[in-house]
Length: 131
Image: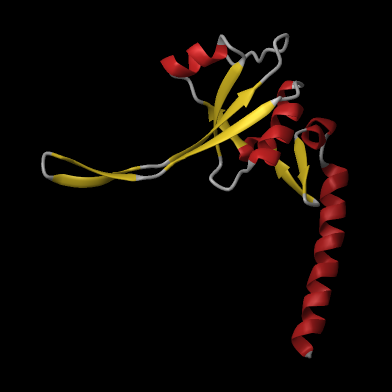
């Protein structure tokens, strides 16, 4: 029973500390938060960086933008992050999970890191300025 009481005290302390932190944050930081299932997540946590390749630039001509996203991100988080960061509403989002691969070069084995990409489809009139 003592364990449960201890948890209650810890959760109350966390609530107090988060309220103090919220009042200290600037307005810009508050705008950069995305709400998902009652939790706040940084936009930079969700959208790691734009994925700039030849194929991605061909997609951009058709209003499809490619971003590298966090491994734990899902479509809802990506949709909310794009809304907050670029002020556009995505029509559709596809997620591509590329697994890690083992490679060898000159007898030395290694791993090629995997990544997760999000293809964000926008309406005809909307555009995102990446560079």
